[in-house]
Image (cartoon, rainbow, N blue to C red):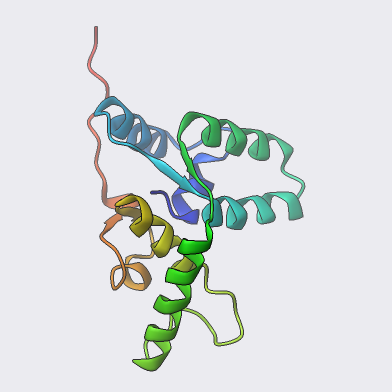
Length: 144
């Protein structure tokens, strides 16, 4: 499951070749790649704010090409539990007054049994298996 950072990197008019290779490597290996609704929200709101229509179109293509995971009530209940547990143990991932997108993303990943590809491993690893997106070193495609 893509966190907002890698999703945002891929939703550029021209994504960096390394990011495109990472995604292509997962897809070539038949690894399911999920787009969480909360990550789409985080990326889309920024693109809308800055009027980046081409990136919004690229995000829409990613949503149609990958496996989109909508937010469901059970996910929000799980996210609320994760949020409360984090605060009870003194380890929040966001300010008390903020909507904590990380716990919602973690709950979405848990709902489908996915690891999270992220650049923010520290916030998510306590909830779900993570993969550091920028540390993934895919092999370039082989010549035919």
